[in-house]
Amino acid sequence: MLPALILSSDSHVFEPPDLWTARIDAAFRDRAPRMQRIDGVDQLVVEADQVLSGIGLISNAGARFEAPETISGRGRFEDVPRGGYDPHQHLADMALDGVAGEVLYPSQGLFYFRVADTPLMSAIFRAYNDWLADFCGADRSRLKGIAMINLDEVQDGIKELERAARLGLAGAMITEYPLEHRRYDQPEYEPFWAAAEALDMPLSLHTATRRQGKIRGAGDKTLRDASSRATKAFYPALSMCDMIFSGVFERHPRLTLAIVEFELSWAPHLLSTMDYTYRERHEEAIYRFKDGMRPSDFFHRNVVLSFQEDAIGIRLREVIGVDNMMWGSDYPHSESTFPQSRKILAEILSGVPDDEQAKIVGANTARVYRFDAARLTAR
Image (cartoon, rainbow, N blue to C red):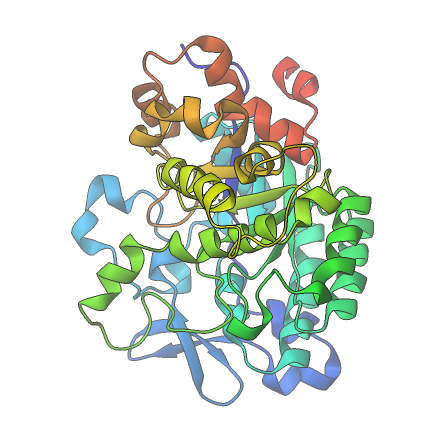
């Protein structure tokens, strides 16, 4: 039997078509993201003609169980589950799926880290953060929103992080991989790490949020699209290593980094190679930790991984760390476990001790994002 408390560490809202045109700063209104019907399907468009992506893959919950061959980037807003943009229906869908609380990320917003214009991207993020705070207001004990933060200008990022905390959002998402010359080992980010730690705002690296590069599911299809998806953990792994090897978590021991929607089983080998590099390659691992700490120690103290149904990763939990694993449903996206989350969890957690199951499906998420587990269990 599954634990009483099930929380999703990775679910999504689906932004309504008028979110940015209605809420963005007036100076950016004519450049605001919008949904536009092109050749019979809805596309995300920024500025005059920059088509970012279709909406099918981010709005097609349940299709994988009924007709996986229909999964496509092509979609129309009228087919989006109402729970994506209506918080009361969202809560009803959570009840249907047997989930007591959810951590909420954007859907369309994932792609806006590709916007080249820094002020426009920041304006897009501010408008979204305002809307998300209102969405979570339907039940803040069960809906925990994650703000979008642009770090092109670090001080502006700090201001938006502080504002997000005042809005009641529970954490912040930054690009999974910055521009190459501004990776997360650079000292310019130090004030931001300090601010996130002081505010107790966990930071997230979520899939599909690289600062540059092709968006999966957009543009002409090639064989390399499959290769890109199959190896997508490469970029957040680099970002995490940059933070660990440059001493970010030594200087900020209470900072939490969540790596979201990249599954689990890539981590054990990386933990081994991080420690090997630190031990054997001093000319490369030039930052030396205090108190005999190893890179894997910082992973186990400061990093959590959000996954959906990585049965191999579950078997490797002793290496990864049960305290470092958080389940998520990915509602309402095409790969979501909704509405069969409990069935899938029962299958992949078969044979896992009850106390470990409790951490993986709810307790770790409650700890990181400050859900009141006792209150939710008593409902």
